[in-house]
Amino acid sequence: MHKALTQMNLQIQHVISDLTGTTGLAIIDAILDGQRDAGALAQLRDPRIQATVETIEKFLVGNWQAEHLFVLRQSRALFKTYQHQIVDCDQEIEKLVSGFAPRLDPQDKPLPPDRKRRHRNAKKKRKKQGRSENGFDLRTEAYKLFGVDATQIPGLEMLVLPLFSEVGRDLSRSWPTPAHFASWLGLCPDNDISGGRVLWKGTRKIRNRAGQLFRLAAYGLHRSPTPLGAYLRRMKSKLAPKAATTATAHKIAVIFYTLVTKQIEYDESIWAQRDAQRDAQREQRLEAKIKRQAQQLGYKLVPLEEKPAA
Image (tube, rainbow, N blue to C red; front, side, top):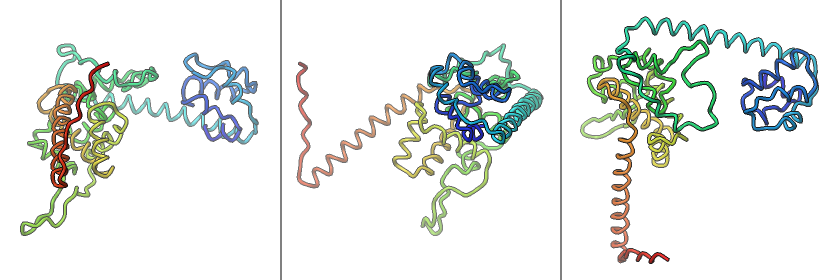
């Protein structure tokens, strides 16, 4: 649909961020119904769109060639078909998930509040994430399956059910410790040692779908304001991007294993306390390193005197 509109010189992507939103689909349907007046098409603007009606009208003046309109009509029909197929998949997934006995009843132990909302941008006031059009609530269903709200782990909001299909929910039965779990995922170093010498070190090149899901969760945290996002950025500055993603995925996997096996909720304040302690230790190590280097060069560091407040 985007390509067909561009070929007709309708550059509405510059004023509408989501072509499949309310305004975009309304304009496309009106065009397919025969509307060619730019002013009338601009009046279909949703009040939440930042661009004014006059601005949108300027980007709706184009050529209406028959071949491009045909492609637009075909693409719109395919989009509707795909949306129906997605709803059918959600309904089938809901049937399969309901076949598993829940670990707990949300009425006896209510779902904890969503702590991730404070990290979301204010402009994301669309439909609730994790809830499909047929009313399937991913967060509630995952909570009943695992017994904890694993969607609160940064990066795993939409990957909880795929993880359930790969590793199940009784993790301690297959992997006694988080180290065993991370090793099976291929997210930990595998040193090849012979005769006391390290011949090779690095992660094993294995194809593990669960490990790829954790890597995908870590990869999406580059701009995240969470402690795990800060950890990923810090590792990127220290290691290569690929190694930083693997290290963050390992940490997410350990957190997921701990939450599911010990039945505890994710608490971000613990990460904040640990980060504060590690930052203080990092500053102490840096200060000691600078003093040691200065002493080797024959200098002595003297702290600056604090200026009195004006």
